[in-house]
Length: 469
Image 1 (cartoon, rainbow, N blue to C red):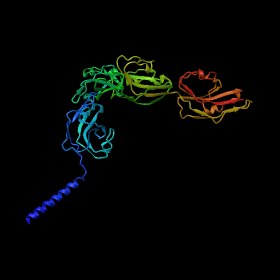
Image 2: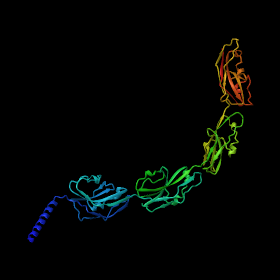
Image 3: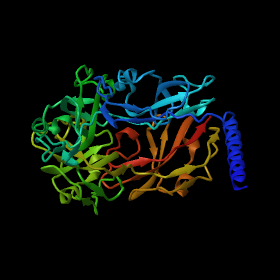
Image 4: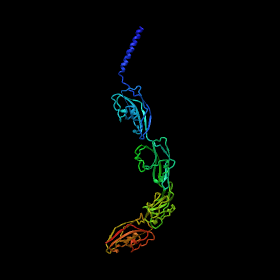
């Protein structure tokens, strides 16, 4: 009985195994792309061919009807589909530019779609399997790291050289190296070959502005590397280091404060006071003061603030004066009274300016009339004349009556006496009534003279017309 039970158990097991084998024929095939070995690889993109070598594929357990190799970027965009390891090792990775490439082994079944250059692995549809990947790192040229500065110089005619510049060449690559000096727009000013040559450059010659010092590494065939070009004109394989800044500043004449000042040109001395000078940022070997008109014509060159405050601006007459502080270097020409600031030649700088307004006397404004009378033997007097003295200046005032040729007919001292003048006595014609202000010393102010005969400090108001028909 026990033997029968054992036989039945064996038969049952055989039936069970047969059933399992039949079911496995319907299960999907599990693809296996194997395992790649080799790398990682690291190349410099320098125009020279870069190929991988020594990559192997462990084919143990590979399953799949179709096989190929796949090269993608680090976002799995398909760059190429070499069919064999020999084809993979024939790929020039320098052509791909900087970045990372991945090499895969791919197995797939018929019907796979999306397998083409320009596609992405995520777009594959069908049965496929990718192996692990081998990394190919494509590095750019490296010009190293510059150290030193920043430097700040004053453009004053004296040589200015940098010092202490050094190059950290730890990651430097590239077959050719030099240094490049540009402005802040990357226009090339010079191409010194060594640090010693860089430290021999006189940056004062470049004038005011900013220079940048770079280290350049490049390969044969680079074009555009010449003074006058821009870095953007380079064509070829190249890399620039970080830059060191050289600031080239103009002379600084400091800052002045005071005023503005307003004087009346009346024969009385007018001096400024309270002029202040801030020399915090002052540069330059020689300083003094300059007084110009508002067209920058030089009127005087006082050497000190005390001398500036001793200038009598009344002597300059009506107009505007400007007070400046100037700093300059030996060799400056054109700094003399009678010249214009635009005539200065050399290294100099002017501060801000202070304004001195030199105003004429003001006789005020009169209103009334015009008046029209008939010459008929009947007395004719004006009335209702008023004087607005809001802006009136001058130590002495009066009234003037002239004909229409400005010949003086009378000099009534007040409005009341003005309104007491009998214009019928003047006969037919036109009279003009004026208000006058003046300073002691005025000559020519008498009946029978013309206004043009007046000599001294004076001013006339507007006139009121009296017509005598």
